[in-house]
Length: 218
Image 1 (tube, rainbow, N blue to C red):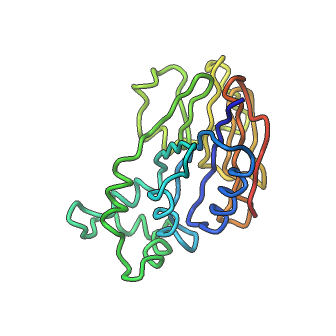
Image 2 (spheres, rainbow, N blue to C red):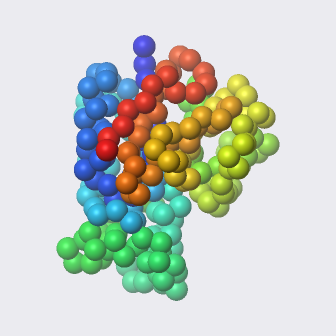
């Protein structure tokens, strides 16, 4: 039996991330971990989170690291040369100050910028599609619009009936404490940076539909 673990929005919560990865490693010896985006901003150690993502998994594991809207805000705020742009105030108002504070010199490492620029928008396996915030079932996978995938929000009642038999896994909209499944979608953002746990929804790679288990780190 093979599993995929979908990790919700981390937002600089490095300690919760490390604890969660340890629990995932205890769950099974190998598998796939999909990080759903928003690794930076608001929390105490965005730089440390990015360092850990760049470090990568141990043997037997595969990591899929997707972009979130906060990564795009950071990229928009920093020019190719590393100087600030007109979008800097927007980023700072949305958690960017905490990100900059996590770097000893107050500037984002060039290797972190390069890493974020290389992140994918979406990931698809046999039974599921993974993305940060939203997915349009009426549009082909390769034609999805970045702005919509990263920024749009589902209504709480949206069950994504038109996506069947596939299931969409996302974050972006914090839940009270646990991931929630509605029809053909699961939201794995449990508000780690707002005092909630960091969650990983566990999916059976051979079984369609919602998660079969849940792992959390408080």
